[in-house]
Each structure stands twice: as structure tokens, then as C-alpha cells.
Length: 315
Image (tube, rainbow, N blue to C red):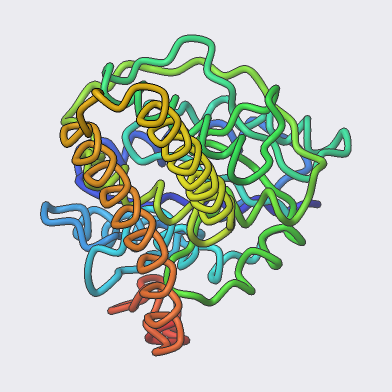
């Protein structure tokens, strides 16, 4: 009998989390050949989510709660959950009820057919226009920076075999990005069609700042493409400046009456100066993250384990 571990990062979900757990229990009780556990990771939610997690852990003996000391973000919360799973298959889903747990059987069937990882492909996303824009940018970024196949759809609702999760948790640097870790572990990844529900309570915790931080994690932790892009832009700017210089000299030789172009010169200086500062900032971002990683800054810090004996305080 295979064991399925559900990992759910929890933030501002005191009203939705009980419903998600009920749906998981109903779904898994209707499947033969599987046992299951649920790992709830409270990402220092400011509402009553922690109390709800405590109540669920007391009510059900196959639920474990992990409470983080501060808000580390969704991907750090997933890493914390991954280090507490005991199942053969791990399924990650959201705490807001928009990713229906009843669709878990589709993931398990696809895993049983031989896939290592299966992502949900939403037939009709019910996110806001802002979230849909963020998802589109993330799609482009993962394709060009991380080598994601064009036909593969990436989402927060996915299932993976245990060996994939074991490889993912070997990553101990400060800025985890689960999608990048999965993509570098295996190419045997598929999709299943999943319906996406309307949000019934509250609003998304993703802001522009959060999304920008997530994108930076993705391409600075798992790709050097931005540095290569910076090199190409530098070469193009240098070549353009050289050709423009030749053009200016020739124009002056053939028509001495042509005035020297102060405006063009200032535009070129401002443009090149801006590009240099941009590239230096990009390099600084890489160097800063290396510095933080060398200082052993933790991915997350666990305040409390609920439902089992505490094993560790930080990672």
C-alpha cells in the first residue's frame, strides 16, 4: 500500500483550511490501496490559522502541524513540509480551496502510469487579472531561464514521487525555488486537467513585491541566463557606440558644416550609464545572494511541531 503525503502551506486560511482537510479525507477514504497523512505548515499567519491547525492535529492523528517563527514565503514553507513527510508520493496544494483535493485521484493515476512529477493544468483559472499576469510572467521566466518545456504547464498544485522530494530537500541555500529544483531533478513530468474554483473567502496573499521576489529567486538561484543576457547587451551597446562613432566621423568629414550633436551625445551617455548601472545591480544581486548563503542564513525556522515530537528547530 502506497502512502500519500499532502503538504499544505497555510497563510490566512483559518476559514478555508477545515474544508480543504474534509475534502482530502473524503477523497482518500474513497480510494483503495492508499494510506495518507497531511502536513500543515503555518507560515506565521497573522490570523487564527495556527489555532485551526492545532485543532485539526488534535482531532486527527494523521495530521502534523509545522509552525514557522516568521513568514518565510510559500516555497520555504513547502521545503519545511517536505522534510516532515513519510509518504511514497507527495501532493502539494493550496489552503484556500481553489485547488480541489477531490482531483487528487487524477494525480495518483498519472504517477501510477510512470510519471515522476505531475502538475495541474487549469482549464479555467479563477484568479484575478493581476495573478493571471503574474502566472504568465512566471511561465515565460521558467521557460527561458530554467529550460521548462513549452508544452508543460506549471502550477502550485502538483504531485511527485518520493525520490524527487528527497532530491529537492538536499538544497539547503537560503532562497529555495521548488519549481527550479523539480525541473533540474527530472524531465519525466506531465500535466492533468484540473478545474479551478472561485475564491470564496479572503483574497490572494500574493502582492507585486511577493511575485518579484519569487521571480528573482527563480532566475538568480537556478540560472545564469541573466548574466549572459547582460553580456550580450554590453556587446551590442559597445558595437552600436563604435558604429555610431564611425558614422559621426564620416559625417563630419563629408560635411564640415554639420554641428556636433550634443543632444545625441548626452542621450548615448545616459543610455549607456543606465545600462551599466542595471548590469552592476544584477551582478550585485547574485553576489549578495552568495554572501547570504555563505552566512548560512536559514531557509526557515521552526517554532513548533504539532502532532509529533519536535525533531529540529531550524534548517
